[in-house]
Length: 278
Image 1: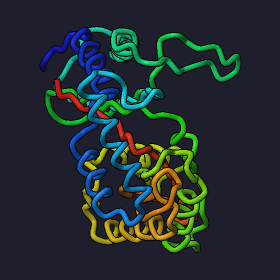
Image 2: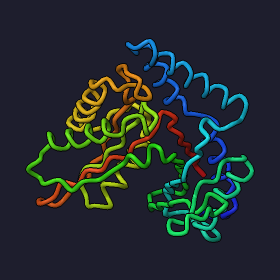
Image 3: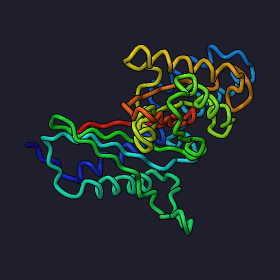
Image 4: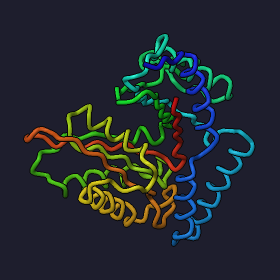
């Protein structure tokens, strides 16, 4: 049994919060470059150039990629052979607080009733999963709410079938318009229960961008949705073109025979996420 001081977890989350705000992952940058190269609209191509330049400036100057530095979701994969010395949740929340304070990041979290800002960008939403091994993996996902607000969930009747799933996801993407700052990344959760589908949709965003699902039939469904989303011509920031979305990631879970839950979690072009292994 390995022991891990909670302070190490706090430090890791602090660093992830700051890095996520400043540095887009290589898979995101590669996707934006590829979108620029295949873009058919001159205006949209110019905007993509600006987004790429913005990401470069943010990384070099150590300033946020976007002024909306998000509300944080933290996924913890906790090895069964690890004993965290101290309060795990408190350690994560302290890491978020330190990261947003020390990184001079905008604090956007408020009470839903009074709308008073908490002043720390906490609490973060934390999901803990027990896994095999003696390590702790931390996945940090800050979501700006221009995109988060465009997310949704439906309990479809099973008779809707996969055609109904495609129609729902594509409809949500098109209905979002320019609000999620496209080109967007679309996470889809299919199956499980009401809350499981929503969690799957958010977890889908953590997959390396453009990596297809392992099951061939699910990968084909991802490609079908992506093609349909990009076919309508809304494009970058709603200015037209063939890059409304960069990728569709779909995760599945067995569901009840009388149910077909489908959740859509939309992410903006500044797809900020970081990971650390302790």
